[in-house]
Image (cartoon, rainbow, N blue to C red):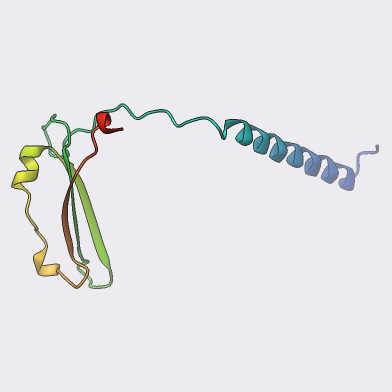
Length: 109
C-alpha cells in the first residue's frame, strides 16, 4: 500500500477502532469485579481531632448573593457533634436544612 494521506487516515482509524475494542473488552472483563473495600477510618473534620467520625452534619442555606444554595457537610466525632449548631440561620430559606445523621460504621456492612 502506498504512503498516501488516505492510507495514513485508514491506519489511524483502524488503530483507534482497535484501541476502543480493547478498552471495551477490558471493561467487560472487569465488570464482575467488586470494588475494593474502603477500610480507611474517617476521622473527625475538626482540626487536631483524631477521633473517628460518628456523625455527618449538613447545613444548606442561601448563598450570600441570594442566587443559589450552599450545602456544607462535615464528618464529626461524637463530642464535636454535640457542640455543633446551625450557624447560618440568617440565610435560612424555604429549603433550609440542618441535619445530623449517624455515619454507618464499617461493622454495619
